[in-house]
Image (tube, rainbow, N blue to C red; front, top):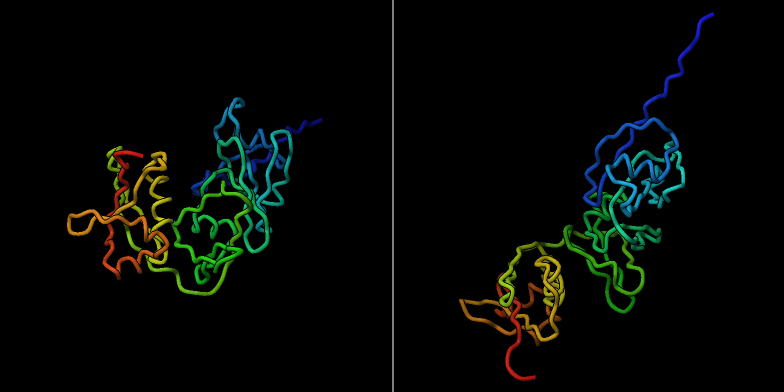
Length: 243
């Protein structure tokens, strides 16, 4: 009488962080739990990890530590250390994301937006804003950020350079020409990783001289350049003197 040894079939899944660079990992379970998936991604049981399943129907679903999921529904997972998730909506479908910040390029990958479609950030009171591919959106703002795909050419971009004169830190990053100076200033703090001081002043460097931009923050970059208020170099200057 022969005996048979039962073999566990390896189940290949794909795991990525918030960079969406997927790698293949093998499991011995076709219905792993969130805890098993986090372990497969290299996280320990003491770390707070957000596990999201990117389903075949393009939905992104949260997987709890003790919850099991079927790999039939999708073999791609986004797993990242995070103490919370942030909700956004793309074309009316809600998604949870384990990072406070997200770019249009990431939304495009998550939602499967084709390259011939643009990504817009919806606004209730103003026109929807066409996003540059690497433009960063802060999901911690009040309310649910809503995005949609639409027609239109990708916005023209420029690389700007911002220096914090107080901290002596600087960063270079791409922005859409249609981005306002206010939005560029806001993003500069994220890129430089310096806290905003309410006394800070945003200014440009034109021909070696500082130009105060505080009265022009609603202008787009291209509009400000056409008025010769700036080129591509900006500075955050700490305000000195009296109150």
